[in-house]
Length: 388
Ligand SMILES: *Cc1c(COP(=O)(O)O)cnc(C)c1O
Image 1 (spheres, helix red, strand yellow):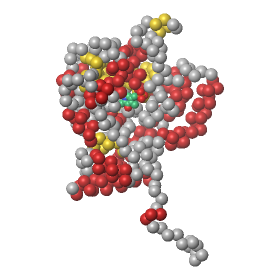
Image 2: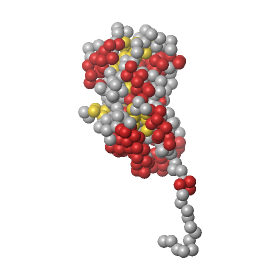
Image 3: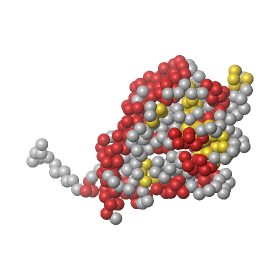
Image 4: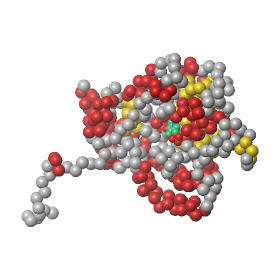
């Protein structure tokens, strides 16, 4: 209540306190919601004296295999290791070609090169932005031993049509699920469609550790064993190396304990991500910007497309909304890879996507108010676009 003696507060435009920006991601908020449980899990591991190869890793591997609907899970140090170990497990090495897409952040290409194989690029579906089955069919040659399909932004690639292309061949289908934990189609989860599914638990992923982590999942006992051997110096038994290409790559006990705890929340968090995408979608109306289908994907990133991306970025920045491009440089245009892809055919859909995609904030701990601010900003931009 105002009283005559209360000091007069003048509210002019310049007095308005600038609101904090809406962050693209803020992993600290997830720690804050689970803080005590996470602290307790870390203390238990620390006090146990088992820091690697202990019960927490075994428990997480079991729980994550169950979650993905696969028989086996092998914990690894990170997602890039998972891709490389998957390639080596299916027998890829020097002299082999592996097909992947150029718009997926270069992770698969890096793993293919690390395994000693040659990356071959297929183009993407223009809207869905995952591997185009027809383009895969066009690049399949006799040297192709595997295909890495990335479920980009949390959207499941068209695994039915992609499997149809490789059916009857000995080509191994490897899924890069680092952005698609829990994405599901017809009751099948990402990672359960191909020979091996590869995951990263990098902190910003849908299921994120407090540091690095990764895993492969598979229904094939032989591939799971091969991955375990490759992740431990090629040993089949202690100090007896039977498998070439081995090294050390492990998920540690603290990360496994944290991941087991977080796994129970994954479906709820994914539902929140999809809900945020739905709200953005409604705010955009019929704007010519494409949002992920909000059905059953994991909505890892909310990616818009605009021919006026530079303007859109400026508009969002003025409204204090962080944004980022995933990814600005297609693999075949990376300066470090010029010799690898010399003479590669044009990949028009991937090249166009690199110029148009824009990621806006989408993570489960965004507040209602923050989502609303993004919605208002998007609505203003799309109104302006309509009036052009
Ligand atoms: C994050 C990511 C990776 C790599 O995972 P790291 O754990 O960082 O090695 C691989 N593929 C995709 C699609 C990713 O998003």
